[in-house]
Amino acid sequence: MTETFVALDPKSAYEQAVNKYGTGIKLLSAKQVTGEDGKLWAELSVAVPEGYVEDERVQEDSEKEALVEKSPVQEEVITEETVSEELASESETALLEELAALKVQLSQMKEELLPQGEESVASKVKTIFIEKGIAAKWLDKVLASLMGNSILSDERLLLAYILEEIDESLEIKEESLDVAKIIMLVGPTGVGKTTTIAKLAARYAYMMDKPYKVGFLNLDSFKVGAFDQLGHYADIMQIEHVTIDSVQSFIIGLEQLADYDIILVDTAGMSPYDTQKFIKTIEFVQSDVVKKLEVNLLLAATVKYEDMDDIYKNFSFLNLNSVIISKFDETRHLGSLLNFMLLYKVPMSYFSVGQEVPDDLLVASKEYLLERFIGDLDA
Ligand SMILES: Nc1nc2c(ncn2[C@@H]2O[C@H](COP(=O)(O)OP(=O)(O)OP(=O)(O)O)[C@@H](O)[C@H]2O)c(=O)[nH]1
Ligand SMILES: [Mg+2]
Image 1 (cartoon, rainbow, N blue to C red):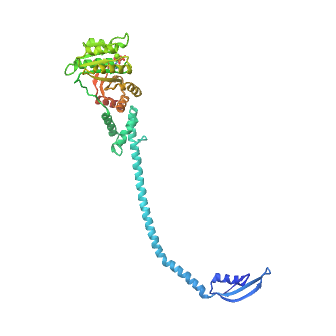
Image 2: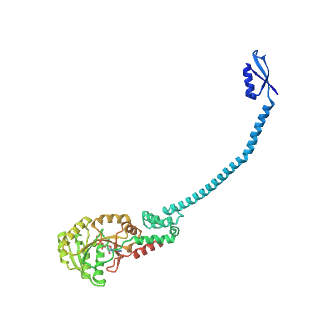
Image 3: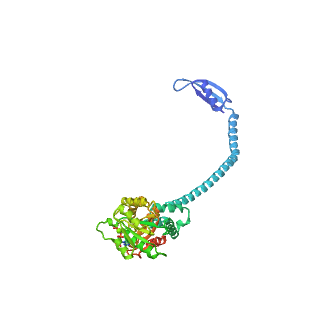
């Protein structure tokens, strides 16, 4: 086969031919021709060797064959890749499934740890206790300790568990009359100090397995012109009763009652600061007398948590031995009181449950508190 190449010079025309068919071409003729533009062009006629084309075909064919031969290999490679891809996608699926399971587990744990949403048992139980006055902070601590525990998904069990935790957190001060002591009652006006002292006196003097020698030190006279309420109880119960009107006369009073088992001290109209002055005096006078001093704070069960908090802070610098809770009969809701006890962990010694002297007094007990609280929860 022949082909003609045209260029501005013979060299360029020849290069065109070589570029197209390689060096195997044979130059047949070369001549100068005048183009339509009037320019002189070189026209080369070349013979393209058959073999060249065939070679190329062979080359192309062998390349195709090579490709065909390669294809199984490539298929193998592809197969391996496919397998590894499949494996990858399998392990990816497994991983995704695992992740999804973990996600569910995490959300459950989160729900258990920080109960949120109506549907959560923990959240529901938490709300019940919060509505009754127990602090969310305290409840969260208890719930967090149960993380991963099946109790969290059982409402009744969880209720029982939290009640048990409350029970364990409460502190009781056991009644002990082994040694002679001075028992001082402090607290806000009208909380029931005088009434409780009368009840305690009757209890110690007449209602224990043995009678104790009980005397009153009455600081109530600070209320100028007030009815001597404690003196009145003292007369009825035939209890020695010394009225004090100054820090100095307190020392004389203590000496007068030196051989008594229990001296009950009523404080009225005294600020915590005045009370502290008295305590300092007692401690000073007491340095060579063997009588233990116990200071008990009276708190009314009717008072809301914030007020209990304030009252406690006002009196706590007196080194309180215990709290006596009064006016249990005036409220059905003990959440605030329980909450206060859970957060402050002050030991409780007695409960005043009414106005009747001496009957309406109980030795503090967790059972009584919890029974009343559960009654409130049920309601
Ligand atoms: N319902 C009820 N009333 C109580 C209780 N304890 C005391 N009271 C009454 O509360 C009122 C005040 O009691 P007091 O014993 O005088 O209180 P106080 O702390 O001595 O008061 P001041 O001396 O004025 O500071 C009286 O009417 C008591 O009968 C109680 O447990 N329940
Ligand atoms: Mg009083």
